[in-house]
Image (cartoon, rainbow, N blue to C red; front, side, top):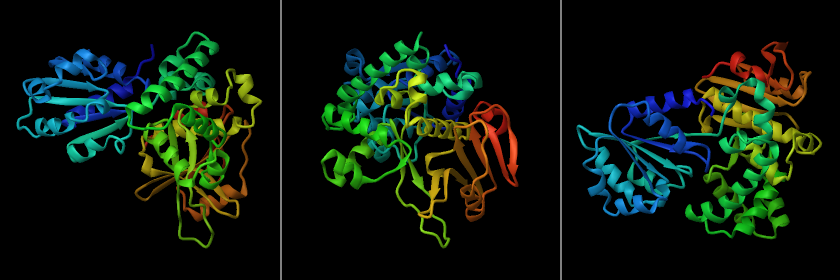
Length: 385
């Protein structure tokens, strides 16, 4: 069992400040487990409904009647399966004084849960839960977390083989059952082919024309597939940053399979040795590290970008919050060095500083406002925003 104290504290704080908290995340990242653990620590009345459970579905056949008399904390799991609940939650959240606070759990982005954005605007705060992070598994388990990914059952499996088998089953169930439940009506075989193809483009700039030619469909079709997987929280799109400089800049997003373990399963890489000999090893490391930086800093997706020019200068991750600009370059090496690209990014983007996250063991300066930080020291050497 992995202690998720930080996530429990975050949930507690959000619930004290908001009438409705939406806890979203990909399937099987531990949303229900986290909430059940949280409920053990509170003394107020607790009520939990799972909208995949036929009994709870029957109890919710008259949602206003079922919910209006409840006090304390009310949890509704798999909310995307019961869109008629959102108008009811709006009415209940507007009561003053409100006898109950609500936690809704969903396996999709707020944009996909359209009913919530229409019915609960201004009444709900969304928090995205990822799989296990470095602050939960510890810096000494970096490689295990990278190879297996962050899905709890995949990470905690007794062996790499068992973990790989779980992830293969996860992919199949996700495509055959979960996507249709989210209203995404694309055949499982088609989406599997696209997801595998996307894995081979992991950490590359999105090129819809190239993927459309390879897939044999229209540009708009592959773009819709990408957006659907992004909305299901299994793909990350890192948007480009545009600066008013005299350089032509890349304007398409970078795409990543969100979980490194799922990426390795899509690429059929069960062991670390298989991964380290594969051409996508460096790209896999980049996506994994970017995810850990974003989680550790506590920044929102709209604050995270990459930057690249057509002349070749680039920056793997740019975090912009207010006047603060932080740059991160990812290098799977034990001895990183300053590159011309780093100097261009530091000057053109007016970065506060630039950290080069590497696979070694020591933190050391590389130059003015540039330092090398090993991933295993990320938690100690880089402060959250």
